[in-house]
Amino acid sequence: MPLQMVRSDITTMKVDAVVNAAGESLLGGGGVAGAIHRAAGPELLSECRALGGCKTGQAKLTKGYRLPAKFVIHTVGPIWRGGSHGERELLASAYRSSLDLALVHQCESIAFPLISSGVYGYPKDQALKVAVDTIGDFLMAHDMTVYLVVFDRAAYTIGGKLFADIAAYIDDRYVDAHSDSRETQRRRMALASMPMEEEEWAPAAAVPFGLDEALSKLDESFSQMLLRKIDERGMTDAQCYKKANIDRKLFSKIRSDIHYKPSKPTAMAFAVALELPLEEAREMLEKAGFAFSHASKFDLIVEYFIAHRNYNIFEINEALFAFDQSLLGGGM
Image 1: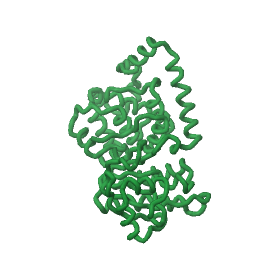
Image 2: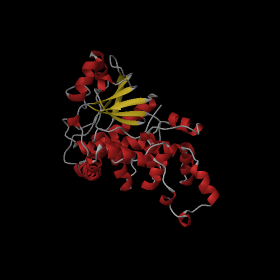
Image 3: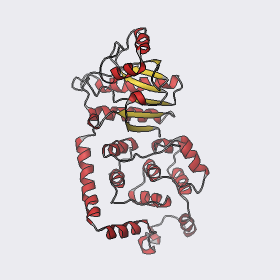
Image 4: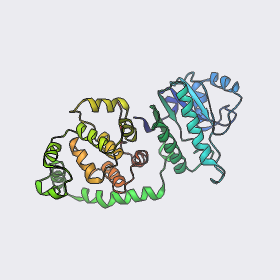
């Protein structure tokens, strides 16, 4: 998956490069920088001393030494001073500089901490927004697997209003679904996965294509529907799979296999990338053998964003991560 948020210790990540949220001296310290230096060993400090420091918003590269990663990319994020001193631009520059350096050294994978969100005081929800936006922009132009590593639950948050709005959306629907008896739930799930009856379809007058075309679409596979929707929206394949946070190799497999059955997160990711309205998103999900369920927090969160016409897959994944759900997208 091109951008993945994970809870882990960044010093254990098996990637080409890990990013060190460093001070300008590059000589270690507390937090992420101290942990990386301890895990890499004293050779890392010796190499850092020869680099002559690093300016805020820029990045420098060293070997990984005892880390599982081949390289350490050291970048300096801004100290939060209220938000009116260019902090956002400097933080975005720290991410871009690190990604550019990884690209120059042919890294296929890189792991970031949430830069500046510790002792530098950058508000965590805003720091996350900058990280996701900057990494997302980069991935629209380049193929690389990027991990945003969060050490623990307390280090992570999304905007309070967004969290509250999603929680309310879930409560309005999820509680009702789970207040039913098990038998009622079973029947409801069975009905949700059944094909629609004829009277549930839109009347013929509302269908903008001929009868032959309408009949042909009834037997479309997921792969065929996906490719048709891409063409209808005038997108390239690359634009679609990047907006879906899908690995290029996985997309190639879906394209080449007419009978390919994707996972539910992958099918939903394509519905988001194509910016389908909710009814069309449900149709695409049915082609993959799934249905939106109000007994699933994962489904309700994705439904919330589609219903509100917010198709930014990285923002959706932020919310899914905050609610301990699987993320949209996929890889080989």
